[in-house]
Image 1 (cartoon, rainbow, N blue to C red):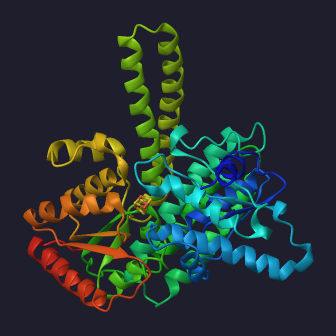
Image 2 (cartoon, rainbow, N blue to C red; image 1 turned 90 degrees about the vertical axis):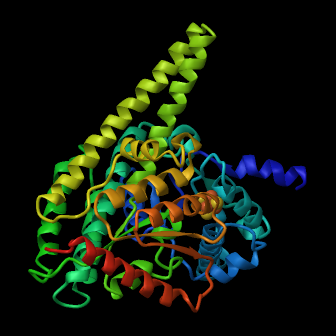
Image 3 (cartoon, protein in one colour; image 1 turned 30 degrees about the horizontal axis):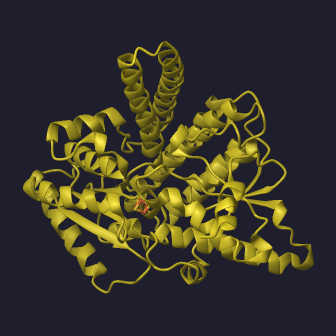
Length: 448
Ligand code: SF4
């Protein structure tokens, strides 16, 4: 890479106030992405969710094939969107009107490099060089102060966190109701409308941040969703999904695995988006505590003061998140028995007890292994690991979980994806569901 290209990474992959530009949000999760975009709109940003998977051929054309699959998909999405805008607007297309939102993680895997690589690709098009990339990073616990209008960061953080948890519970409601629906298609139709109404309520939240209104609406949705279910149906084998966050939440990339598992007779719970946000906060606290011990050993009073201030801010945020997450789940659980979410402490405890993998190794492998053990603890009948082909943390999780769950006699399936259609996938899913049904029957579970 020449030095000009290198400088561009600093100049045009940045954190800056996105006001006044159209914020292009990747469609990772059909519910989550829309509610996050709505949170941006609530603080005045013109955020839109881009159409997804239509540009996969473009994403592939401008990558070597060694990149992670989500990188190819998101690159395809931005190229496809900008091409559509260029065609639509012709001479009036102005790259400065847009900004592309692509978060990052600080290692050890490749997510931290997606936005850099995509910058280099966008720079190959004269018309797209002027489209900056804005990011939030796990490095500073997804700080947003620099990317939303001045003074709105705290408001945005609170609203977007609740929006993410609402997305999780909407998805869990769909998964709880759809396998037992009276009228085929009624759950999807109803939950589509429910999402639209939550999007509208989120973007028009107003300065008072009245979460009670959102939670009241959510409770009504739960009541109506429950009425779509056939009463007295035997509970299906419950399948827990773990794995890489993009693949497990992006139905196009995972070839609609949740619906397929339902079609073969399962009831599915997907790992939540909130789990990752809570994990990032939890990791930041662990890092601050490590720095505290270091400053203590060095007798650095200035260091201790600085770390304490940072630690306190993170702890307050953690308490806030727990409180809000509990509130959102409770609003629904009073009416519909969706699967509650686990805390990161619980995941850590499961790993510590099992001693096959240490929490300190980090990455999504921690959440996948601990999350799978949580499913087992809650009597699930099978676990599916959904991930991009060659994904590092998910491959580690697979190597630990496969023998562990075999020992526990819990059906387990690896489901790696790279966009190709695997002819034996359907057979693998059917066989897995057959095993899960046997597990349910042999354990006497599955009663309403
Ligand atoms: S988690 Fe997996 S897919 Fe995501 S960047 Fe890391 S290696 Fe790639």
